[in-house]
Image (cartoon, rainbow, N blue to C red; front, side, top):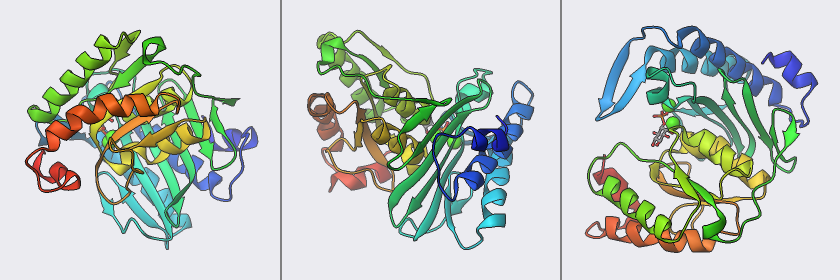
Length: 290
Ligand code: IPD
Ligand code: CA
Ligand code: CA
């Protein structure tokens, strides 16, 4: 993708689209250059890594935005944590799917979202290896490589293929995820897939390939752009209690084509409630499970 070409052929319009696309193009260049090379890797916890590529992509994205809009706030996974209630806010995951990247699996993405007064305005999720661009602007639809996308119409779990994610936890949260997968199988789903890049998972539900996606812990940078894409495609994303996804803290997620939402929550919430048992409030347990 070239940002000028992408702009000229863009089906959507927004005053900040050019900045957003340029930042993604620069981040993508950094990721392409490092893909399948020996990169410096640091551990952030069990199976949770940050590579040189994450950092270089982030620097390129943030610098592009900062050069043009020094007064805008930024939340980005590796380096910036401005206030989530800022009037003009960018939320960035410079490399979603770091584990895939490290293992030379070409399924990862850059996720860049722009929020104004807490409302998502613009979202881009881009896989630089496959040159796959998912683009959404509030009120203007969800677009994949120039084609408008809609969620799947299935209104039964047993007519759906589903997606899941595992957080880095190897204890109770992992077990709850496995138990939920078992419940979905017992509900005769067509199948379940785990690809390892939540931003792409959300877009793929928006594109109608999957009926739903769930994970017990994600961060705002994982879902900020993808949730707008999904909403614009006619779907719905909430936490496992059916509440809106927060921008100031991590959250569980249930993202569906809309028709399956109530039924999906019933299944996911069962294990979520067990997971939270013993913690003073549902929103605080994430601080205890790293
Ligand atoms: C991760 C991916 C993965 C999800 C993890 C995320 P990262 O993001 O989205 O699919 O299961 O919970 O943290 O660390 O590769 O940016
Ligand atoms: Ca991520
Ligand atoms: Ca990341």
